[in-house]
Length: 469
Image (tube, rainbow, N blue to C red; front, top):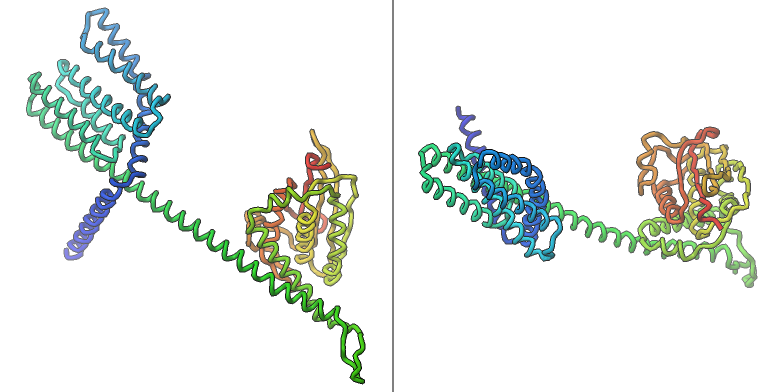
């Protein structure tokens, strides 16, 4: 029993705090201009769909009323009601869906007028059918429906349905329909309308508050991302200076003459650089290339550079040139290059430095993930499609290739795939992302897969004729 009492007290306290929190939010948003605009706009959208629906649905009932009137001289006030309700629905359909009022304040007053028309129509209809049966279901349906659907940010809706309740109550007494049963139903409907109105509005307040919190969080995240990107660009840019300094020092040592002489005479002779300096030189250049890669990824102005510095080139000849310049890398792992490039007379308009960087990146990757004493294959073919020719270049290696789980992350920045370098090389996960970004801007398609002949990775580049010269 004690646990039950504690649980009830705990839940009651939480419920009270929950209600207090929502009413506090309610007080805050009632003065929020953005909330007021969004609430009125929501009601405006609901009425845009509601009035055409009512117009179309009510026409068959109006035709039946006219038919009954012509046959039996039926209830004339109902015909007057139809003559007002149908044109009114049509008018509001036109005004809401083909707006003449462009101002926000004009649309707001139009929305209030539409709500007043709907509630008044429900009240009038119920009063018209009072003589056939003492029922307030249609009146209740209208008021409750408005309370749930239309979530106004102020007291406008309450004023509208309280006016309808006052008119209906006065009409009940004037028509002599003031039985205790009807009055009881009337006040019960009014209480339910007020309650549903409040609940509906609180859901609107709660959803707006959550959306606003999400928007604020998104803004903070965007600003934080911009800040971090800026810091990253500054840091990477500052790293270039010491690396360039290392390269300069290595260059000075390998180029400057030695002044050491056993007879203390200055004799000009060049010292042979130790092998370690060659490694320092190569490593520093790779670091510098990685810095450039990250700067390319972080920069948003590369598209202009690519477009403004293009020239006519042969992709196969450029690939051969890159292969020759990377010969030291292939030799260090005893990798054989199988050159099956067909040397087609195909020229492409592109930025040579950037395309060179892409080829260098792809070939370095192929060597990085290939074991020693293996093979890298370069192939090309020219295919004809319906409207153009396409040069296809394939780079295949003997490494582990791509696994199925790599597919979603192949071109994602800083993603490390399943394959591991076979030597002491490092992998930052930006090579393929950078290649994809640069190739897309040059209109070159890149596809990744696995080689059927060598068993490793296969990179396919497609150069379309539409970009060729």
